[in-house]
Image (cartoon, rainbow, N blue to C red; front, side, top):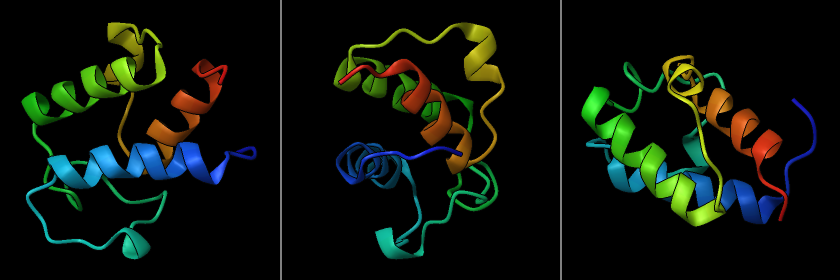
Length: 85
């Protein structure tokens, strides 16, 4: 994964933690963590997070891109590729 600004990463992480049913602290979230297994996301939660991120970063993610998201790092990478901020 390439360089991602700490600001962008923090904004993505904020949405992930707000949507998660876990009490995980931001410092403990690692890129290799599974959205489903570690953050307890189901499809509906993942879709809500994607819509929030699209609004936050003014990007559009295709259904295929969304379906490929498995880990926290996948989200970081996709937002990094799409976001021109």
